[in-house]
Image (cartoon, rainbow, N blue to C red; front, side, top):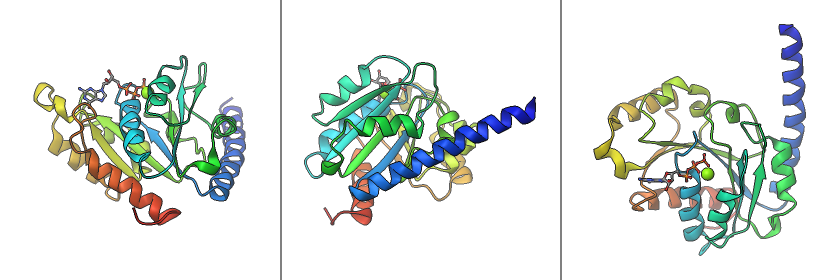
Length: 224
Ligand SMILES: Nc1nc2c(ncn2[C@@H]2O[C@H](COP(=O)(O)OP(=O)(O)OP(=O)(O)O)[C@@H](O)[C@H]2O)c(=O)[nH]1
Ligand SMILES: [Mg+2]
């Protein structure tokens, strides 16, 4: 019984890996930097993308794929920032896989995209296992969630290329120990830069924008 489950899982992941490689080829062909944005539900992924797309679109071309179980609510919010966006509804699946992302790419102007943001389904577990062909994984954590999250969900943080701590405007109102969170992140993912900001006030976001533009310039672009 156990062996059978492992076999099926392996086959699913193998198929996913093939689709992820195809996505990577497509990104390479069109010189697109693909960024997988991961967090638990409600940390502020869409809020961050609305701000980020509004600012970055003045310098580079940005597109978004967003995954949720149901509704087009997030795509509608992001569309108001004036960038191409596709909503994926996963039904019951708790993560995006490479095939779903591949389907969404057919509706996006890849040849006119410099950075593609992939907002994953809100979940700190399953999305860590599914490669969608991205270049970078960004993990977002809000101060409403607890400073121990990097210790409790290490795989997603260990693979992060950067970690963002959002909702810093709420720090006076919640029992979130920011220093302890920084220590926890240092222990679990010492390689990952940490950005602290509030999507509500905008404070701290410029460092995040600069990091993105530098990553894009290093991969495909020119200095901005
Ligand atoms: N106070 C405060 N609220 C925020 C901040 N960022 C986002 N929010 C609020 O947090 C709630 C969730 O934000 P979303 O952007 O929908 O979060 P999400 O991670 O995209 O959520 P899912 O897609 O459902 O996983 C919304 O009510 C936002 O307005 C912030 O920096 N400060
Ligand atoms: Mg969202």
